[in-house]
Amino acid sequence: MRIMAAFALGLSSLVVGGGTVQATAAPAFQLPFTCGESWRGTTSSSAHGSKWEIDFNRGNSPDADLGSAVLASAAGRVVTSAHQGNSNGFGNLVKIEHAGGLASYYAHLNARFVKAGDTVARGQRIGTVGKTTMASRKGMPAHLHYEVRAKTGTWPNNIKPAVFNGVRFGYPTQTLTSKNCGGGGESKPQPGPKPGGNPYSPERVCGSGYKRIDSAPLGKAATVFLLYNSANGHNCVTTVKNTGTGGKSAVSAYLEVKGKRRTTDSGNFQYYAGPVRAYAKGVCVKWGGSAGATRYNSPFEHCRG
Image 1 (cartoon, rainbow, N blue to C red):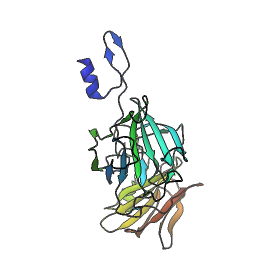
Image 2: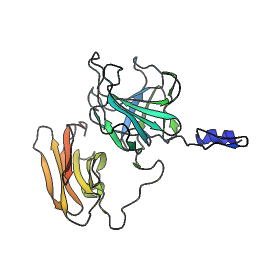
Image 3: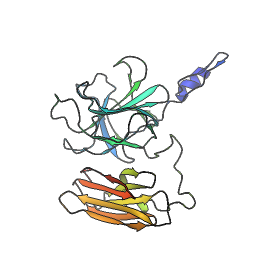
Image 4: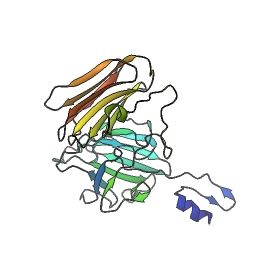
């Protein structure tokens, strides 16, 4: 009975007989994309060594997804963040080890934002969708290659079926909407502003109808956010302070639509810089901001708006 209960809870070790073995809960995996985004996963690639590997896309053209945010699907420790060169077809790869004897792989990334040894939270931005691979491969479209492996066993038998939001992926093809909305803890809701903290969320700054599609930390001082309003096709950028709120300090936010002049809001502000808005439906944007001497500058990305 105890064994059955342990398997139902997804534990990696059990209480057996008279001995006690500390149980470790398996990670609560979520889709590795921004909350609310819908992505189509497929296992049809002839390059796959297992039927459990997934390639994710959501755009209608080969590079429509280039630069889209990739998030950690569960909390863990980064053990690999490197370009694999010609050793395999993964290109820029991030590998995260998790509780329960599992590791998640994020391949072909355009950019990597974590390094080996980092501890990451579920929902943390670890890179962007790309098409990096070995030099001999040409014409690969931008996509995320995702898989989960057991830390023991040999390839490809150690590749396991992916589970998102508690449900096994619908192999061979399924479109899912991301529930990777918490950022922080594995199952705890995110707290609201602490007393004396920042009462302004990026949604409050940008206004009704805007939803987050990307973000980047500016050290501990602030976070710059990119939002999009699907009703009017406008992007919005704001830099929201995390520390020193209520007192004025130097922060900035900017938005540049490809082919147009950059718009920037900068100064000494109490709570946030921006909002900076521009129409960008179907056009690539460059965005970023600063808090003191710390800056973030994106490449041109999010070309679908």
